[in-house]
Every structure is written in C-alpha cells, then in structure tokens.
Image (cartoon, rainbow, N blue to C red; front, side):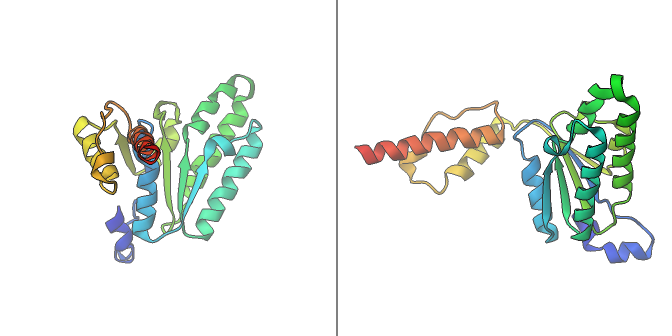
Length: 202
C-alpha cells in the first residue's frame, strides 16, 4: 500500500486506483492506533484521529452531518483519516426497531462518504468488534488487517525494547504473558516506577 502511494502518479497513467482504505480489526491494545500513526508518518501525512463513539449522536441525522464534516476536513488536508471505534456505526443497529429508515440513511451516507474519498486521502478504520460493522461498509476497504494478541516470544521482544533504556537493576521482574502490548507496557512501567521510587527511599 505504501508503495502504491509512492508510485501513485505512475499508476494513474494506467488508470489504476491505489488502495487507500484500510480496515484494522482484532484484539484491543495490540497496535491498531500505532499502526495508523506509523502509516501516516511513512506517507508524511497529517493524521486526524476520530473516536466514532464520541461522534455518533443518539440523533442519527446529526451523526450523518458530523461524519460528513470529518471527511471534508480530511479531504481538504489530504490527510490520513483514522476512525477509531468504527463499530459505533454498526452497533447503532439497536435503533433499527424504532427508526429503521434513519439507520439505513446513516449507513448509506457513510458508504457514499467512503466511496468519494479522493486518491490523495487515506482512510483507516479500526475496531475491536468487527462482527457488528455493516457488511456493505466493510466491502469498501481494499485491505483488512487482523491484529491478534502477541505470543510469548513477541511479548519478550517488546519487554526487551521497553526495558533497554533503564539500568540493569530495574529490568528484572516476573513478566506477564497472555496480555496485549498496551497491558504489557502499563505493567512494566508500573513495576519499574516502583523500583525507582524504592531505590530513592533506601
């Protein structure tokens, strides 16, 4: 995908569209936001991060307007638009019993916004609950990447990278496994801070 952006002008000569819609899904705390930031950095683009759970309104008509404004801003700035908690749209199916028509209009509005994204703007959507996202919306994303919980080996590598900048005496503790990268970081820093404070009080 990064290569496609790099050679976008060449591909356009052959009337080939670049893949500019990515769907990230899977276990929480395993790097979806970090991945979005890394992609934006690699493309030298500004990233706009939007938590859809905060944008979505109980009044569905307002939600459509909010979404349209977010997309317009990203397009103006040729940015990477990162929509976190993307399942907030899918979860709004709970309104269907009382407002099926309005829900369908919202989904159609989002589909239209996605379809109209120009080639110089990148859309990245992320969720921990991909099963609730409307299938018609999912079809719009050319790339779908699943984020699984890290293995013991992967967590050891991550722990080593986190601990490398600290003195040896602060690095040794019982490591936790079967957790996410985010949880591992919080746990490691909690232990290290306690060790540093204890050393000061001796």
